[in-house]
Image 1 (cartoon, rainbow, N blue to C red):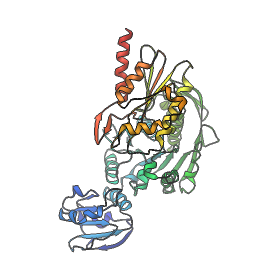
Image 2 (tube, one colour):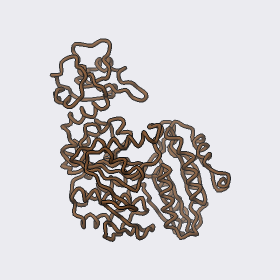
Image 3 (cartoon, rainbow, N blue to C red):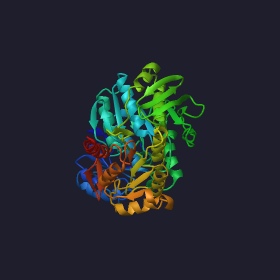
Image 4 (cartoon, helix red, strand yellow):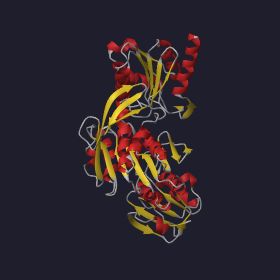
Length: 490
C-alpha cells in the first residue's frame, strides 16, 4: 500500500473531492484490471475515453480516481482528483509510486526516426562490457543486466516503464539506455522521468498517421529536449537539417556530432565493406564489424555519449571495435555461390535509401541488387509509393510484398506501393503478396554474386494479419532458402 498524498507529489491538481489521506494498493489506467484499493487514472484515448468507465471501476473496488472531468455523481467513499492532463499525471504518479527510480540511475534517452535501436543497444553493450550493470529499453527487447524481457512498444507505458526502472534499481543498475519514441513524448509516457542525457539521431518522414504533419513530428521529438534538465546533456547530429532545431530551447548542456561538419565529436569513413567499417574517430583509427555510413553515425553517437559520461576513451574505442551489428540491422549471410542476403529493419524511405546506398557503395559493380520490401498496414500510407520508388531506383529487381498488413488487405497496400513505380521500372517489379514466396522468388532470381535485400521487418519474429501474429522471421526464411541453394550447388 502507498499513501495517496505521497504519490500525488508534483501533480498539477485543479480540485480534489474526498479524502486524500488514504492508501492505495495499485495504479491502473486499464478499467479491466481494477482491484480493491486501486487508483484509477481516466485518460482520453484515441479510441476510448477512460472517463466512461469511472463508475464501473469504483464498483470493482477503485478508491481513488484521477480524471480531467468529474462524473455527475460523486461518492463520499471515493477520492476524486481533477487534473488538466491525465496522461501527464499518470507518468508522474507512476514515478512517485515506484519511488522515482529514474533519479537513482543514469537514464539516457535516444530519439530520432532511424538509429534509435542500434544506438541504445550498442550503449547497453558498451557499458556492460566496461563493467557496469545496465538496463535497456528498446524496440527489440528490454534487458535488466542479463535478463531478457519482451517488449511490445518502442517505449513502454508509464506504469510498465517505471516498474522496469524500479527493477533495474533492485538489480543494481548504474545506467539505463532507452529509446524515446515520438508517440511516447506526445502521450506523456515519459512524464516524471529524470534523464541524464538525450541523443538525437535524425528525422525523416514517418508516423504521419499519428502526427498528421511533419512539423508536428519534429515538435514531438523537440519536446523531449525542451524538457531535459540543466544537469543533463543534449547530443545532436548536426548533419541532419533539423539537428540544431532540437537544441533551440533545451536547458541541457549542448553537444554535437558529425561526419561532414565541424562538431564536438567527429568521424570519417576510410573504408566501408561487408566486413565492416574502417573509421577515424576524433583522430583515432578503428575497425568495426558494423557496416554502412548510418552505422558510422550510430557508433559516433555511442562514442560521444560514452565520453560525456566520463568513460575511458581508449577502452571505449577498443570495445566498439569488437561489437557486432544489432539484430535485424544490416545482418547478412552468404551462400556458397556468393549470393549475399541482407536483412534490415528499414521501414521508412530514408532508412531504405540508406541501406541501398550502403550496398551500392560496397558492391563491385557487376552484381544485381534484388530488393524485397513491403509496407505495414494501419500506418503512414504516404510513404508506400515513396518506398517502392526508392527500391526501383536503386535495385535491378524489386519484389513488393506484405510486411505486417494488420487490419488492411495486403493487396491494397501493394496497389498503393505500385503508384510509386514509374512506367520505365515496371518490367523489373513483381508483386507477390505472400512474403515467404517473395523471399523464395528473390532467391530463385539471384545469380552468383548477387545481393538480396529483405527490408522492413528486421528483428521481428512475426507477421501480423487481421489481428493475429503468425511466426515469421526474415533471416530464418532467407537462411532456409540458402541451405536449399547450397544443396543444389553440391
